[in-house]
Image (cartoon, rainbow, N blue to C red; front, side, top):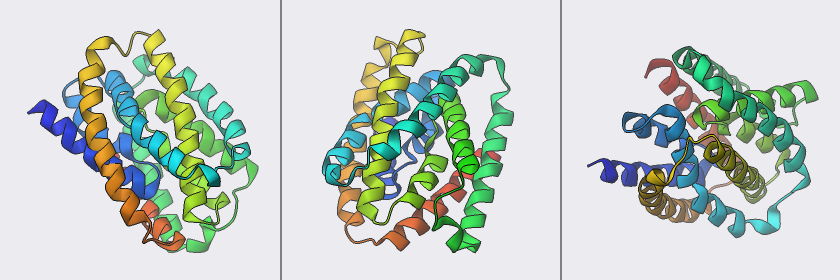
Length: 238
């Protein structure tokens, strides 16, 4: 039953990731903490999506803007490295609620003021997004929502957005997984769950790729704002 749940949630995670560019870890972390520790679940969720992220990156490789990725990743990774070590000393439930409130507020803001996300953020806001995303990635494996918003404002087409954000997450997967393995958080015993989840994630990604071709940038933005809001509600109340 556990493997079937991981397979099903992997498929849903791949579908969400393929349509919005992020969110797979949020979906996987609904089920994984029920069968393993949170830190380990975060690492497994990250690796389950590795094949899907690679697939999306290759599919949209001609639209990648690598220069947009490097500096944000350095800031993001520095914070994530610190928060991986910090996680064992913090009240994680309180942090989940804080993340939930932030995501709900952002979803409401961008839904009610759609032009707010049509221009690049000021440097201080962009830096805040990178730091907050890195912090929660280190704790829960969830760094996607704010980085998705950041890259969304820099992209003029759906393909450009998906290519850039998936490249960012691909680099992140290699870095944060290496860190978790070195800390003993991920072990060989996690491989079966990762492989089963990957199968579902790849199927979900293929389905999403067919659906994404029918969506324009405005529709993708609405999907992203909706899912950010739903993610926030999940962290607030569950």
